[in-house]
Length: 236
Length: 236
DNA sequence: CTATTCATCTCGACC
DNA sequence: GGTCGAGGTGAATAG
Image (cartoon, rainbow over the protein chains, first blue to last red):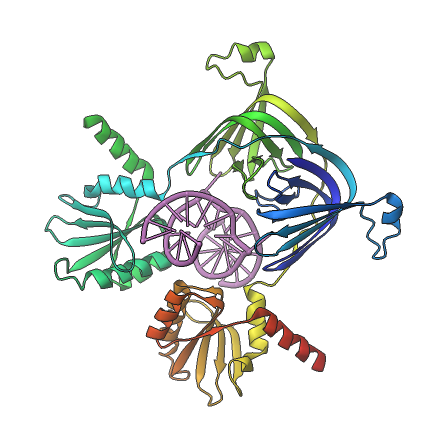
């Protein structure tokens, strides 16, 4: 990994073209040749970058050559980075260099995560009676021709219920569930199937559309579900 | 901006919990207090991070104190970063420090972009007869109760056409256009309104759904449209 | 390999 | 301040 702090200008050409005027920035060149251009603010996203796989060629020139630049751009080092597959290009022109260091870091052992949608689905499946007393789980990831329904269950009366789970409930989730319901209701063994749209938070537009389609909305409390699960884990 | 290369371990707790075991990494502390943890590979996304607004507190201790750590974690410096609004926390424990430098970069002048969907919409609006001879533009961003239609036009016979533009044509774009058409066709001044789904590339599934809904698909060539536009720019 | 879906999404535009 | 849609989305997972 090479770290350079320098006054630089950057040009990118690919799906879009973008330009960064001359200013001091942090440049990172990773072991795989990928390049990040960071400013001293904003978010984790670089101002500009090149993803691997890519090739980096470096051109250096003397102060005299730089001063004589025809375009009036007195860079002393230029990086030409080209994406191996898409042909996207990133050109970085370094003017004044404030820092330049390199380190061997090796391969990272990687991140361990917990708490995403899969977990939410597992928790609700394990606590399906959270939705109503006497409810039973039929299957998680119930397969249909157009994709798997998150959860298929039966209510206390034995009627089928298809449940779509999202972390955030938005309009396309309702559309998705609608397509599943249309298909499931063609199966005489299941029909009538009603739908439940379950999410940690549901947007107003999604609620309106769901209501229009006769789909019930349920907001899930992740911590509460986890709490239930912890209690049950201790019981069994 | 502070740059630190160090053997470190990282723990994040927020929407999810995540852990990075001890390994050499690049740590960046930006002027706004945000922190990035990068490995020497992967993408432009850090392994872990904290977005602004957040507060950073640094705790240092001597090698003797570190060696006597009750948990057996001989860190010599610990960063506790807390998000001001959400309360998310990031804890970084530095063991061996390989580099530590700071720079004043100031505020970046920012990025200039070109070539995204807005541009595609503008180009097609300016060259609406690309879709058919004698076609005319009614309005870009034609407002409806459920959102703006990208382009409303009339064909050579004066019949209304609603156009949805995407960079990549996928199923939800067809759904979106379907909703617009349903609404627009309730307006007696416009009806009958037909739909055109225009994108640089359209997925087979989206084509099938569009055909089923009576929506025509058109693939757009960005460079060709830009070429047309350049020619016209020169003519007028 | 392609295709789908999630994301600590981020980011901008618009209301 | 929110809400919504796009992204050079990226990244993981299923088929």
